Image 1: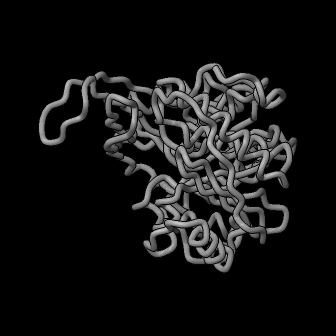
Image 2: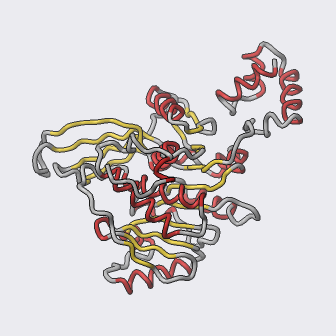
Image 3: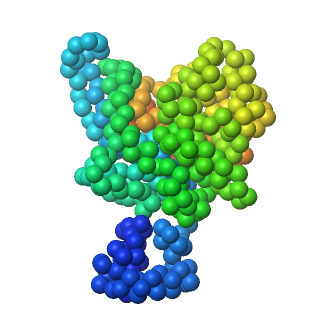
Length: 365
C-alpha cells in the first residue's frame, strides 16, 4: 500500500489526504497513518509530500505556449502581413529550465498551468526533457498562458503579446505550499512574471542562513515594478539596458558612466551582482563592489532572437553552480548558449548537451 501511495504522490504531490483515501479505497485516518510512517522513514518530506532527491536548480515563474508569427516580407503596420506560424513551449522560467535540463543539470520548475490540454502538454513535454514539475499548480477552469511574438522578415522582434494571468497564482501562499521543493534548491532562479509580493518574499527567504543564491531575470520593462526597492538577498539580477533604465526611474543610460551610476544605485539598494545585456553591443557585468566590466558580443548570423535571453540566463546559472565566484566565466557561457540559440528558429536549441559545460569552446553550430 505504501508503494501505491508513493506513486500517487509522485504524480501529484498536492493531493489531500481525503483524495488519497478515495483513490486508494482507504479511510482518511489510515492514509494519515501511512503518511506519518513514510515521513518517519524519510521517504517523503512533508507537505506537499516532497520525495527526497538531489539538489536542483529551482526555476520559479512563467510557463506558456509560445506562438511565433514571422512576416514573409517587410513588416507593414496597419495592414495584413503574410506570415508563417510556429508554436512551441515557452515562458522565461520554463525556457531556462529546459536549457538547464539539456545541459544535464537537475532542475525543478515551479509554475502554474490551466487544467487544459495545453497545460497538460506543456508539463508532459517538460518532464520528457528531464524537468521536475511535481510542484506546479494545475488550475481548474483557467487557460494556460500564451506568448505571441511577431517577428519581421529578419527574425527581429516587432511586437509581443503576453497572456500570463496564471502567474498571479504564484503568490506567497503558493511559495509556502512549495517550500519543501524550494528547500532543496542549489540555486533559485525567478522571473519577474511573479507578483511583487512573491518577489519580496523570495528576497526575504534568501537572507536566511544557508539559503540558496537567488537570481532574478527581468522579462520586460512594464514588469520591472515587480522588483522591490530593497534588493538585499538578491545575489544576481539579469536584465537588458532598457529594463535597467526603467529600474532606475526611467533615466536614459547613454554612456558607460551612466551605467556605472545605475549600478551604484542598485548596490545601495542591496543588490550584490549585476549583468546588463545590450544586444550586439555585448554586455556589462559586475561582482560585488567592482566596477562594471564590458564583455563584447559573440558575432553570429541571427535567424531568430526568441529564447536567446533565456539561454543566456541558463548558461549563467549552470556556470555559477560550478563556480559561484566566477561571474565572468558565467557570462561567457551564457553568451555561448545565446549565440547558439540565435542561429536556430527553436526557442531552446535542440542540440544542447552537457558537453558544452566540459568543452565550452566548441565551434558554434
